[in-house]
Amino acid sequence: MTMDILTCLIVDDEPLAVEGMRFYLEQIDGVIVADHCYSALEARKKLRDAPVDLIFLDINMPGISGLELLECLENPPMAILTTAYSEYALEGYRLDVVDYLLKPIALPRLLRAVEKAQVKKSQIGQSELAKNELYIKHEDCYVRIEPQEIVFVEAMQNYVRIHTVKGTYVSHQTLSALIEKLGNKSFYQIHKSFLVNTTCIDSIKGNRVIVNGQELPLSKHRKEDFFKKIVNI
Image (cartoon, rainbow, N blue to C red):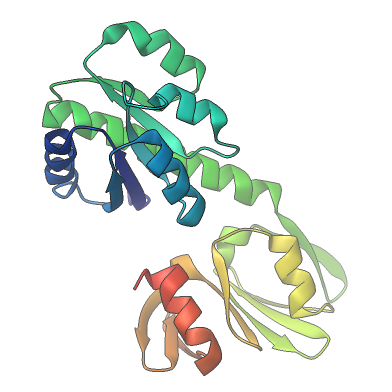
């Protein structure tokens, strides 16, 4: 089973602990270490500027603790607590952390924690997609389409042609209206006339995006934002 990519932030006031965690995480498939910081206050700012999927969070740090950081974040990412003290476990799980790792952390134990986070991210994504399932009027009936089934959408003035894994449907609505209904991060408008499911992208070549074998145009004025948000370059 293909697991979701996890972007991570390491938060620990001990530089050696940060280096050790980064060394381990860089060996795990599907994990990208986006950054690290040495205090909860620094982490709070980084998370506001550049959100991640998962934080590896030490508890005892100067200023505010890791637990206090989780409590003050409005929309905290998934968290795996890392600490030398077992007495905080109950408090950690009250805050719905993914896992609780006692230092020194062994790689096999870390792998299990990361797998839990990948499964949780996948479950959250599927739940969000299910909430946004669509009923599209096609010809003389309404067809139910789940967002993850959509490969790409082509705009045609006041109509859209929705290409899915099951077939193609034409619906009387604008592309902007459909984007609002979808309301999730798996889609990106690469051109005024094309919306793509980013999980279906095969490759990118120049100003062309290949989606499920189909070449689609990438607008020049959207290219920089596309690479920043989707390709992470």
